Length: 286
Length: 321
Image (tube, rainbow over all chains, first blue to last red; front, side, top):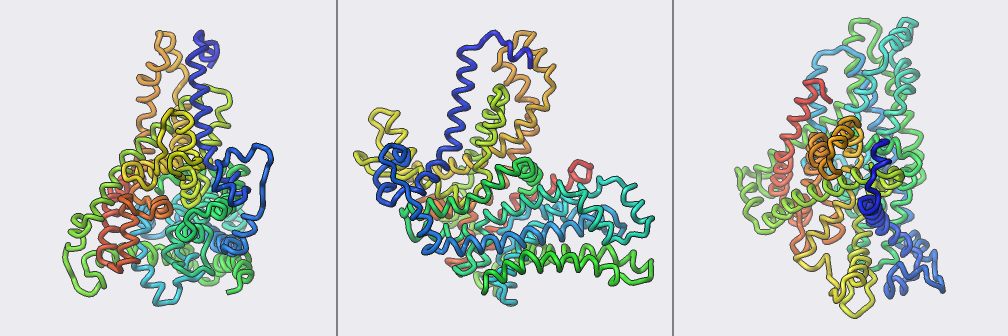
């Protein structure tokens, strides 16, 4: 460290490093910024001049794009749908996986090892491999195009990774802590709810954020199981349909895209630590 | 369906059901201690096992079976669907594109991720750079697709370019002719792959940056005292030491790129020679209603991923993961 800072070759090398990093930051930020700025520009201006000219006087910004897209293009409804889909699709897999993880970590039963190996094998199964039979099943029990169907699907797809992650965490809790609770006469549900869950909160937070973002940003699962029904479509599906039907209607697309991004960006900036650690842990999955 | 009611179910009823289930597990297991000890684990595992069996295990088997049957899953056709996957010109072109993605997406993401990780390690505003580069990981592929469709927007030469890419190139390169990036068949695949790289660089950067920081400083300092240049240190010390991590990140990226779907679906819908196999599968299934070929494509995806599955299981059995 000290050596590096006192390096005797400032000048060109350092300048190159700074320059390269500034260019990198611009490449990763400007596209999103351009979208954001455009979403506040009137339709005719978006079509006639680049978004970077918006900062020249006279300014003309508008909220009309947002108003239109929320009321007329179904994005308001889709925002609610995204919430209705993503909340249970996060709570269910995390909770159900926590049950299983607790059993894997602290209970004795036959076939435990082989079951856990099956879970690890299932970590990388492509969703594509499952959709045709599941859709057939959904058609039989009338779950196609319903919230319940997509909750179950997202829950199941999230389970192997959630079980794997939580079991690793719960297994590392100090045995003395659990044993003393059992000696005091606590039951398994009691130990699980009042001891294991609270102490596993960091792992649960990372996992929950990871799963929520995955579901919130998912297009494929929604496209397959919710299909064409507008009334249950999440934002990703509505936006994908807008791209096809509006083509170059940038005043709609930019506003819609930003509405869908606002929430993930907020989560990212406020809970960056959990989010990054969730993504890193999730890399075994995909 | 009433959306407010659904939201209430989502926030209140679902958690209550879950807590209720786990509280009920003790009465369900019964009073006999031996029987309870036997039953209890299975009660805790039951919801997981049921869902995993229904949505993962059974469908995988059923898909392999229907890949050997005809379009309506009626009669057996042997390997004819697989033959179709590898002979149909549209599928072959998609496979070729996946190969392009596999090579250029993986190399591009690794290269930029490594470059930014190494360079940002040398400056004080490192955490700011990393946060900004990581932002695209937080947004959906659909939103990224819209962002970049807007970036690649094309107007004929002579008109005002409102797409950032053509505008910047016109300003920087004298005599630049604007390109319809997503339409021109010699640039459209590259443009789509660039969007993928843009989204995933942050992921590679974060993991590689952690690996770089794990290199002991005395190793670097010893090299400096011996008179090694920055470039030599990178090539002879840093690069070999991050090698295993690079391999891990490359594997992750390759699994992902096999399944790439959203970017292509949103930006070109696979038209003009940009299709990839995941999109072919979707089309075979929903546009052509050919369950057999769609299943064969899915099974092909799974077969490509099986080696990774085996490596994961082996690593677990050695106590690794």
